[in-house]
Image (tube, rainbow, N blue to C red; front, side, top):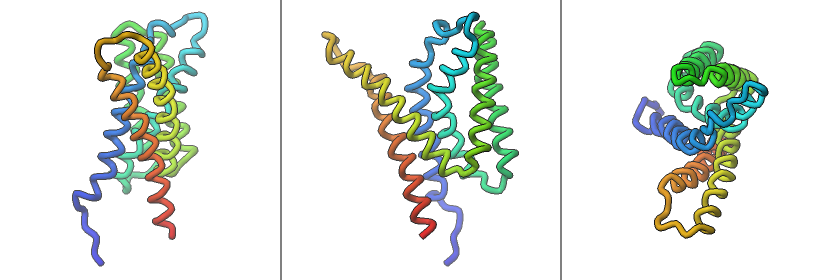
Length: 186
């Protein structure tokens, strides 16, 4: 049987990227009391905060492009991805005046790159990143749902819908990678 590149070979990587972006849309504002965590007294706290909140989603985001570029050596891919994270996030934070957070972002991006190199398998990136970011986003969105239900809000906040959907989708797609990995090895 001859396999050709079809739209179905693009569907799963695009799903990965879409869900990872949805998760980042849900996590960035939560993480994004950036000015509040930017403490010159405890710069390590900023790095740990960024890693705890965003590293799982960034691991998950690395999966889709990796699946589309299987011929690229892993080290080169991880180096390029890490550089892209540093440039996109670090420059953005630097330009808006959060210089200490730009340094924290650099360290977080290097930690994500290190995790990608240590884990080495893209399906594990998806499983770990999907579960990590999905559970974290679920915790954050649970707090939002409880706050909404306990307040007399006139209408449901649409952002909360993104968070809940992103949480569930990340966990499902992460576990789907495990299922596909198990069925491929049988």
